[in-house]
Image (cartoon, rainbow, N blue to C red; front, side, top):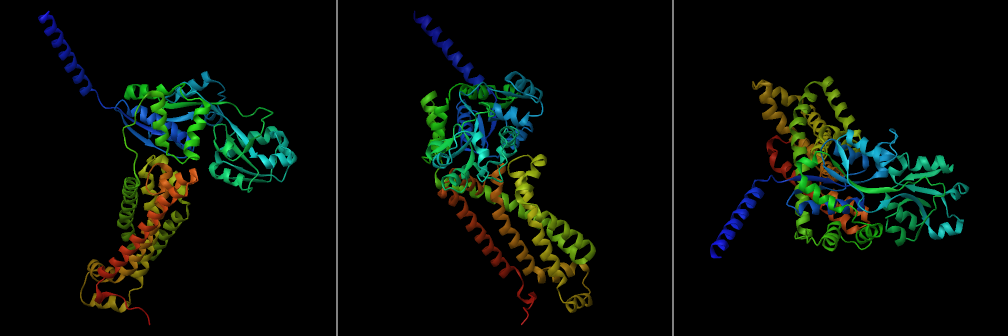
Length: 504
């Protein structure tokens, strides 16, 4: 018996060592999860992130990246591996021109692009139109076909709903609506507009907790144009080979969230002001007995992380802009014809709306800090080029003649006389570029670049003024700090004897 016992222990030890060796040699799986710019998507992506993380995978959650087309493009480009989506969105928006009408044809269309979808997460969503209950009662409106009788109604609709083939265009065509006052509004802000009587009709989702919170009446879709849209995970097919265990962990979510549970989680974030991460952790503890051991990130740690992200965006872009703009400014000063072309090109870049410039960069540089840094670099060029060129041109001719008389070469005149004399104006241009840079960098959060813009956009989405201040105040303080640093640099870097005298 003793010998059998020893053999058993020996086998057990060998099995344990072998198992440990196999686990140690197994490559760590990495996965990048995206989410759209609305609460439900962030919660679902957070739950999927924690499920993948529970098996030891390295997970990056790029949250609030924007709308459907941005996430779709990022998935096809391999910038992200998976994100929560809805079958109705895929069929009604992404494949509207391909005649995809059912699950089978949807699967085939996705497979052609190297994509797969999970089974239903357990609930479906659908568009609808809503009105404040009192206003609807007063006007005796209970269904969408009642709306054409009231031409003066004010509509506040989400941008995606306005442009989707199965959204506003379908409503107009089917119900014969020809409303004169239709404006694009952020979905979360539209609820406040509805509650305050600033708009009369808005688009709603079935899982919006605000429908109950604000007393919104969802109008009956009596002509049945809004289709059921099943919540799923949309992912790259190669994930099955690259991260099979992480994918398997995420797919445990199939069929586990019903509609009421999703509304409850949305309510916990949007009404009770709890974080998406906290709500996701609670769901996993209740449904998978999975305890999230990672502590919630406190305010100090969030500020440090966002400050590092923001500084990374601004310092890299501004440093690159200085390296490029200074020589261009010198060329512009010495070659007036070429200088006008350089300034014109920089001015044209400056006129492009910052959000549009960010989006233009995505096909080239993907999502994340890259396109944000490139856009900020382009925005920083004009003030530095213009100030450098103007300051060099304003140096009195007598000083140039004196430098030539001393036998200085053009390069030595530039480095020893002209640039030091022009330095106050050049530094002023850099200061202007830096301050613009700090403010514009907040928009980088829309494409996953992080920084102070993240809490600002989250605060707008959740109507949380505290969160907005969490990003806005540090951004303003950083801009003031940058301005102060350049003022100091201007004071100490310009040689006293070479400063231009101010006109009396």
